[in-house]
Picture 1 (tube, rainbow, N blue to C red):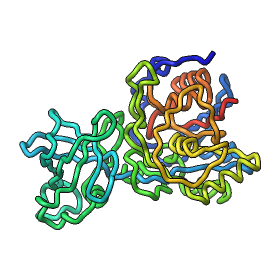
Picture 2: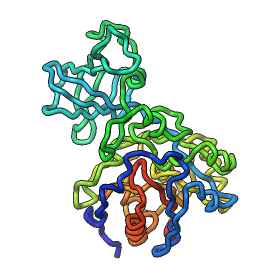
Picture 3: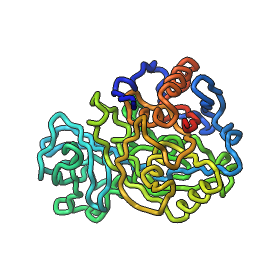
Picture 4: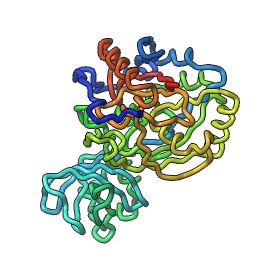
Length: 365
């Protein structure tokens, strides 16, 4: 009989001083926990990953690029608010979270403050935004439109991508207890980030530097895109896992990437997902143990009992208590293996979460 897991099964105590507030000075110098089995763990440096790879392995990277998606502003009445873009729908329209003392009204105008931003033209102090409607699961998001009717300055034809690049801040996760700075604009992106659209970094990729990436042969790496949304990192709040609703995220797998994956599987090689985002895209795209080229949404929620179709090994950071990602890695390597690995990591002062250290996991057979 299959075990039924609850939210509380994925809780653990983490000393706050182990939550990384800054990245390591050199990306590949962070720690890597090689999980050999349920009771055996090896402490390495991340650049030692090369020693764990086999000749016919294929690493699958997520090349999504993080938008500077956080803005600070105010309502028409002057009340302060914070905007976090969840997804840009089209150039002038975006889905967003709004944090304020009182939710803005539909069809009202709010403003992004830009007077302290770099490259701000002296004539621009605020950018008006129309709150068009509610959207998302349970209507927790807002549909925001660049308000060209009121915007009589040179920004009126600009897109959300351009506004974000000029005036946005990097959307560091809430457990990083400091404002984003100019270094984060480089550090909170994988070096191979290419396709703009994520609002959270695919953090397993942050550990690869130019030298490490160059030492992985071209035939042993490939790329897909999954634009990471805020929902992926949210804790599960329902004790019954079946009641949790995942936000959907867009992913794209090219014909070239699909072909490389299928050839590797046919030849008996391992598919190694660089990050849970790559894994989620691959498992969402799998049919009969194969991958086809596609562009679509996924809201896949992987919990223990899931039968993996494509991925054989996983490079990942350490995840939040009660999060969907902790449930995913528990499904991948086994509940007890992950519990023991996290206990070992805490005892050995590994650094946790986005700017923290990494693990190398193998699929539990």
